[in-house]
Image (cartoon, rainbow, N blue to C red; front, top):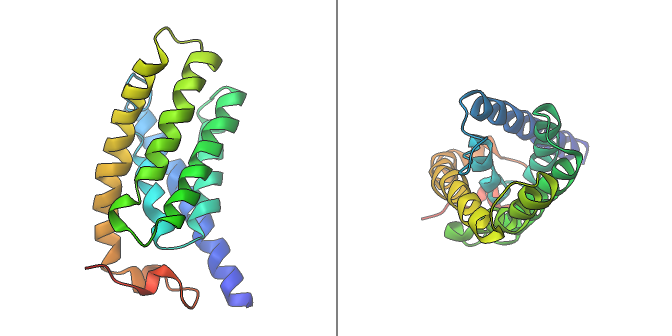
Length: 173
């Protein structure tokens, strides 16, 4: 029992740290600030496919990233909650490999345009924001995330060994 808790907390912490570092890298490269935002860290949203520890890890990583990068308080809250909802959805759909990026994409398409329009008061329609956010999320979660999933899956039994009966033990065809 104690080793399971240590493993869970360690995995969550490493995922949170990776999320922060990858967000800062995207910001430094200017990829997270324009109409189509590509956060490398969003590729990590496929990790609940492998381990439930990714759920709090992604939430805390997003929360810290949003604080560190100077987001408005409402963006910190709602952006982090969108990531949490996406992570939970990915975990729920973990039996369906190709659906794993869908929950974070959908959560961000719903939440982020509202944040852009009402918190930051950016000019433009909600539809425009939904399309541009959607494109960035498809690139980050759908393309980069699925590449990451396939690369990690080759060694998932080593990287994500943890709890009996969890998804990390299964291999996908």
